[in-house]
Structures are given as C-alpha cells and as structure tokens.
Length: 101
Image 1 (tube, helix red, strand yellow):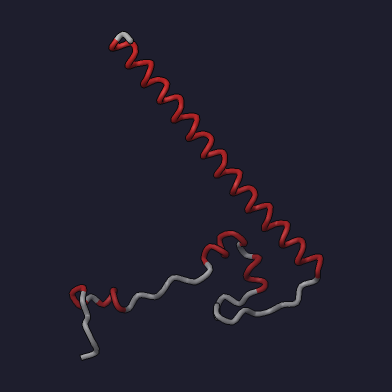
Image 2 (cartoon, rainbow, N blue to C red):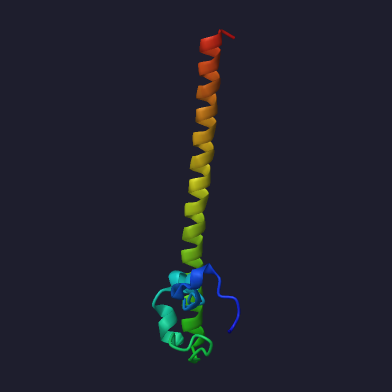
C-alpha cells in the first residue's frame, strides 16, 4: 500500500492538478506576458531581449494599471466609510426620536 488515502479514496482528491503559478501576474499583465514567456514551461521563462524603450513602456503600463486598481480600492474604502458614518448618524437620530433624549 502506498500510504494513507483518506477522503474515501476519491480519485479527484489525489489526481488534482495544481494551480497555475503566477495567475495574478497573468491577470495584471494579460497577453503581454505571453510574448515574453512561454507558458507551456512555466518554470523556464523564454527570455527575450527587450530594448530599454520597450522595458520602460511595459513598466509605465504596469504602473498605470496598479495605480488604477489602487484608486478603485481607495474609492471603495471612502464610500464604505461614508456609508458607515451615515448609517450611524441615522441610528443615533432614530434612537433619540424613539426614546426622547
């Protein structure tokens, strides 16, 4: 016997494929990554010499996308805080009306 095969000996448990590495990078950079990296062999990147201008252009695009994502997160946080403050004010106002403080 090869060892303990828990989970009721279900084949899908021990035959699962691992997640692809760098899925977040793929999400951020999209198809630009495929031009510079052979995705069939993810452990061995296909190195392509980039000119300094291409490298700077890619860096600027990445920075812009990260900045846009951070801006969305900031807006969501501010919206959540404003909504929380408004709801707390309404709760206090309602309690004052009901109990006559």
